[in-house]
Amino acid sequence: MPDTQSPTAPELPRHPVRVVAQRTGLSSHVLRAWERRYGVVTPTRTEGGQRLYSDADIERLILLRTLTSHGGSISQLAQLPQSDLARRVEEDRAARNGGAAGGGEVDGAVARWREAALHAIETLDGAVLRR
Image 1 (tube, rainbow, N blue to C red):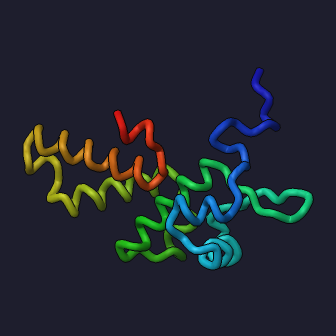
Image 2 (image 1 turned 180 degrees about the horizontal axis):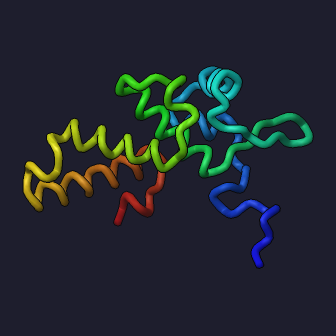
């Protein structure tokens, strides 16, 4: 039986606010405001008071930043589960790309490749980008 008390790798808090700001494109001021006002993520604090974020926190913040940059309201998006946020981002991308179904199978594959590459860039994942 797995230990439910210890966090898994994506939930392990390990990134300071400066790293999160770089990876998400959000300022530390916006991060603090979103945490305080909307509870979008709850970082762990070290004994010295430094906030540490997990990979899952970063992914959630990237999704929220993407949706708000395309007109979404943080107050409406903040309480949605991660899966709903990811689905909305995909729907938004498909709508902006004219929909993969309308462009045929090759266009759909190109759109998926482009989105995967953009996501790798946003998350600074060089290995995925090279693939």
